[in-house]
Length: 376
Image (cartoon, rainbow, N blue to C red; front, side, top):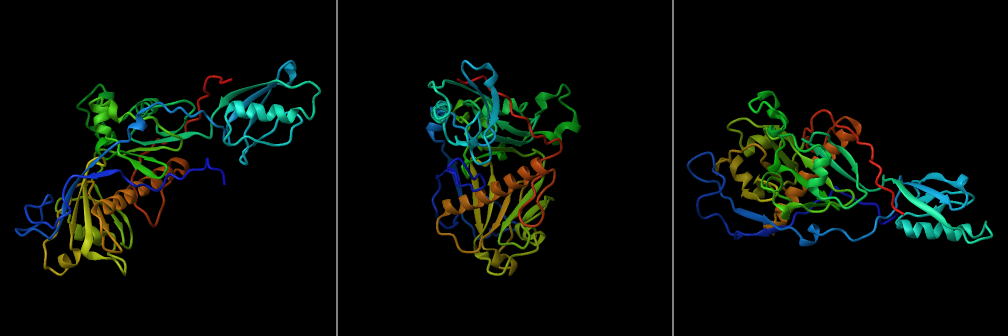
């Protein structure tokens, strides 16, 4: 299997703990239903960006399946042809058998083709190799943007540039009638937007980037990055983990953690109900509260009222480190969102059964790759 193949559905989050991992002793961050707080721990996290993500990538473009090349044997105008790198990473030109160019730069591919051609021509061959289309390097931009889809990544591109290429986010500023109620459902929820890279969640604060112009959030994208911007007014709670049907639950005033778990058809056998977690807040600065759900359903502790966008997570085993526990929860949420959004974009329908459903909205398109300028 080639090293170029990537997976983008596994997601740790870089979190720096800023609160102590101690049992609850004071006023809880998440208020409970009743006068007596449910036993819980509350911590606040602050994400940190790797400074290297803000520097222009210096690695050269490498070829992969689907890339389109224009190849010409100099001195023979009739030899000009367009070839596409096959699924096996090979390319075919003139009399040559399939030449493996997967992972090679344009210069390396040119040298490999010229070397093989020496077997068939008398004079040392000179080739012109021009990149005409990019299919192997892509980024996904889905959710509440003007033109969601899959975009080619042929040159260094920042997150802001990619969002602009997708037409920008759906915000009220895009409409002349700022009071139009009919467009409110299309607004992008920047607090809960996220970016997945190499199977990991990159801790981008989209709100700071797009509303405050914080250049420190404007990282350079890499192939297979996945950007998702959910709808701002989606009033849902997400129930994940050891439940019978992980899913999104419509939010109603008074919805509690126990009621949300019941809407997911209860817990699975073997679920560890003493460390049920509720995660609240933005993806870049989340909060987590731990509640003993076993005591709640026994009537020994009060339940926790939820808010829209809360994540309720039922584990299979007790957690040892609160930071890692939070990572698991956010990873599961973002992974499910990516699967459902990506499936809807490609196939026009969402995944049924296991996993949560996060509506992406209508109008998803697959954007044809834009041919980059010739690279010789």
